[in-house]
Image (cartoon, rainbow, N blue to C red; front, top):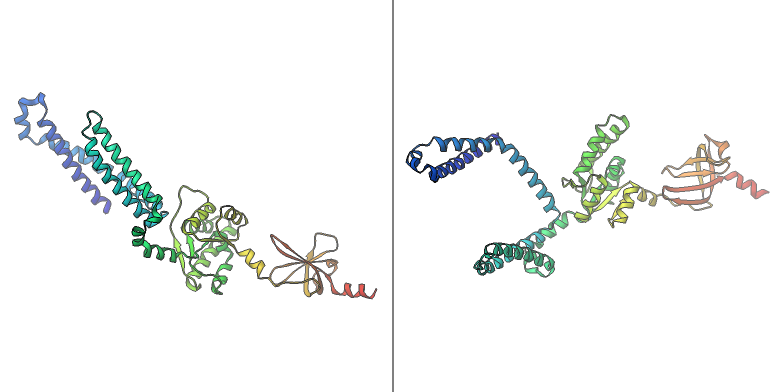
Length: 364
C-alpha cells in the first residue's frame, strides 16, 4: 500500500516537473518565435511532457525505494560502529570548517577565471580539515563530549562485561547451567548472524545436524526464561565479512565484549587478535576434582587401552582413567591407585593401577 502511494506521489512530482520544463522550453525556442503566442495558449505539449516524466517517475519508484533501503542499511551499519561522541565532534568540526571556508570563498570568488572553481574546492577542503582536526583532538573537547557522557555511560553499562555466545557453546548447553549458578555477570549477547546459522543447522537435511540446531534454539528459549542474567539479541551484522567466526571477533571488538565458545580454533583466533575469550571446556577442566598420586578410586573398566594390557575407565565428570593391567577386568568395578596425572589440551588424564597389585608387590 505504501509503495502504491509513493508511486502516485512520484508520478505527480514527475508530471509537475515535466510540465514546467516543456512549457518553459517551448516558450523560449527562438525558431518558433512566430508560434509563441499559439504555444503559450496551448497546453497539449506541456501536458504530454508532464505525462512522460510522470510515467518515468512512476516506473522507477520501486528501484529508488530499493536503493534508498540499501543506502539506509549501509549507513546504519557503519554508524553503529562509531561512538556517538565521535559523530557529534565530527559534525561540529565539519560545520566550523564549512563556515570558515564560506568566508574565505567570498574573497576567492572575485579572482578572475579560477575564482568560481577555487572557492567551492577550498570550502570543501576546509570542511574536511575541520572534521579531521576535531576528531584528532576529541579527548580535549570535554565541553562537547560532556553532553554525551550520560548516554555513553548508559551504552557502556548495557554491554559492560558482555558475553557473546557462538554457535558451538549454545548447542553445548552448559552455558545455561553456568548462568543459573550465578557465575556469569553482565549481558548475554546473541548475535543475529549466530541465530541465522542455528536456523540453517536446524533446517539441515542431516538428522544429526538438525537435532543439534533445534537443541540450540531450545537452549536459547530456556535461557531467556530461566537465566538470571539479561539476554539480548543483537541484530548488528557485518555484511562485508563472510565467516561467522570473523563476525564474532569484529562484534567483540566493537562492543568491547568477551566471546564464549567451545571452538578451539576460534579460541586461538581471539588470542591472536587480542579479543577476550571464555572457553567452557577450560572452565570444566578447571573445576574438576583434583586427584593426587597415591589416592584410591573406584573405576569401572569399560574398554581396552592403546597399550597392551591397559584398561580404560571414566569418572563421573568424564575424566579418562588409564589402568595398567586393567584389560582383564573389563566390565568390573575395581579399586585403583593413582600413579600420575597428565593435563593436556583435551582435558585431564589419570594413570592408575589396580590396588591389589600394589599390595602383592609390597609383600614381595
